[in-house]
Amino acid sequence: METTGYRRTERGQALIEFVLILPIFLFLVLGSLDFLWFVGQRANLDFIAGQAAICNAKAGCNPAVYAAQAASGLHLNPAQLTVTINSPKSVTLTYTASSLTTFTRALTFTATATTP
Image (tube, rainbow, N blue to C red; front, side, top):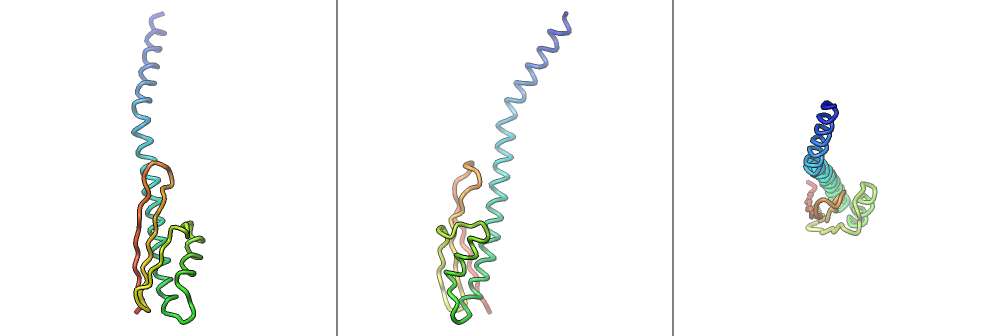
């Protein structure tokens, strides 16, 4: 009979250890997901900035329209994208990136691209 009491004690200990480790584990997993989501959004913004600068250098191409269309295709919200034309060969994009989870706050990214 004493072995069953010993097993019950170990089971309770494992449950308490799980409850103590779970918040730390969730913090790491959700933080990693948000970090990778922001890295992907930043890479997409850099790509769009380069393409918008090329579009700005061409006659008859509107970089703001091009950037909005490209943003929607790359999982960025076009309503949160601001396009600033610096010169005929330079474009600056500002984007407020929302979090994938509600774990972190929104971040603002800025990307500037020029064409030779």
